[in-house]
Length: 98
Image (cartoon, rainbow, N blue to C red; front, side, top):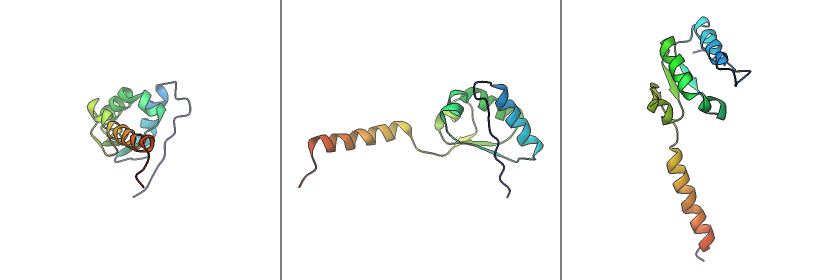
């Protein structure tokens, strides 16, 4: 297995994502993993669309990509993380039992 990283230099330009997908295809990629970041999350629909057009199986870290039409996701549930954080904040504010 060989790993290639494709960066988006100017995240405000959606064509940068198209360029990254084209580079992946030229490199002979069999699949993609899109890492979560504010930039990729902002362009979620565009990335899912490019993955479908490229016919590259793509895995994401957030289920929101799958809801938008992506193939699969493996990662934490953001709402569950917020609920768990609220539980800990509650415990801290109430004081830990001695």
